[in-house]
Length: 247
Image (cartoon, rainbow, N blue to C red; front, side, top):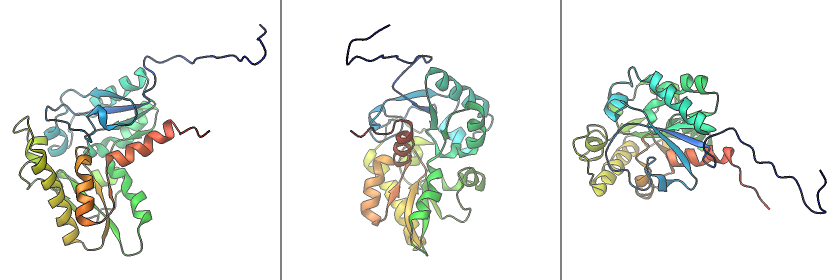
């Protein structure tokens, strides 16, 4: 077949069910409000994403009970997202670092289960004598296995929000559906302040919980240190899936 001068062939590639959303997000099953900035709020992302809720994966079961028995469900859900068109997989709970190797082995696409995976990158940016500290939703149940799954040094200082008035109660204990956002922010900021006060060698903070990005700016302003979260990690992750085309 011949083409007129200046024309070219255009072949659209097929083979998927959904296009234009290369990132798949595995969601816990919960009913608390997901405000802008929360990983589970679609308006958070500057690009389209695919969501899949994992039935039975309540925040309490994943965060307080080690996600016991849920690995097959997460693998099946991840495979569903890949079949739909996802080219990479992430999750909306940093505690799922426990399943990093297993999910990555099962789905055949890049997988980033946890915001905690940023810790080695952030550590590499810090001057000598400074280290990364963690703010997590539940410091008492963030185990060495969770840290090892994300490549985090086991002596990394950690402070949780479980002693706060709102954030932990709503997200993990599911004591109510509504959330006082001002108090939730206060819980996260107070945990970060406690982390820095107890560990003056902390030079940057990584937020484990994917519900914490709405409060990262307030924490950064309070402690005056870089703060990284799932938003910073996933925007980096997605940049490799769809690199910017410069003219």
